[in-house]
Length: 280
Image 1 (cartoon, rainbow, N blue to C red):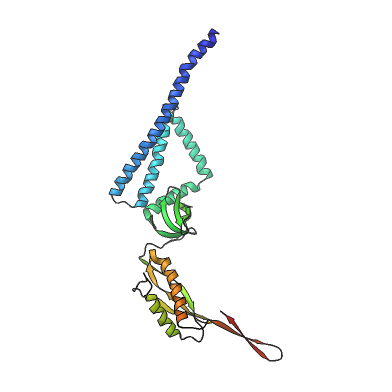
Image 2: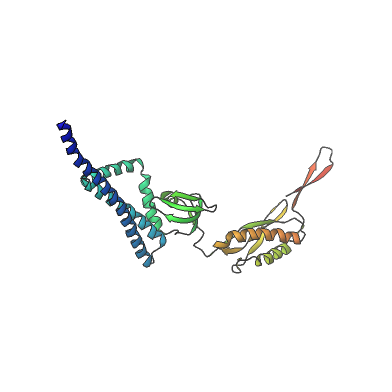
């Protein structure tokens, strides 16, 4: 009985010490994370005062956060008496294993660096890359966050973007809206072009320079096919797109142009002909 009591008396200080260390480690973790957040905010504000690009600022802040958290973890493990050299060796081994298994991670990190410093796009740009069309929200260490046109947050691997063609719709101050208008064979195309140009000039946010293009694009069985191409600033693209379709419909309706149709002649064996008309 005395032995049990002695053992319990010897274990109590150890238990108290262990619990104290765990509680202190938790305090260090939460305080450390708060200090890391504060430090990253200060660094980010300093970079913003230097008027660095937002994309670069976010990328460097993300890397600094990861680095400081690794330092915090190593410090806490050192507090528990775990040799940091052993931890460093373990991390190196894990890193080699991860690198061998997922070599693409390093490629994504390298691609992220190139994307940030070569700047084919920046935060807020509308781009199309790796099959995704949307607005860039963040270029991270491994992935780029893009909000698609239907407002879905999509994460695309940096290497996939960097190795693909990138279309940046925001770089140039304006872009062209490409639409087509079908005419009947009997319609005077010169009059139709003049009417459409007049209608396009009345659409809000259509640029006067360069002037809208309305020309014959091609011919088909229904008649001439007109290319209708107004220009507008990027933020007004879809509004002008829909308004242009509306103007085409209203202009042709007001002019009472006949519906485009195809005429097909069918010949039977007796030599009699039958004329069929199919709407285009």
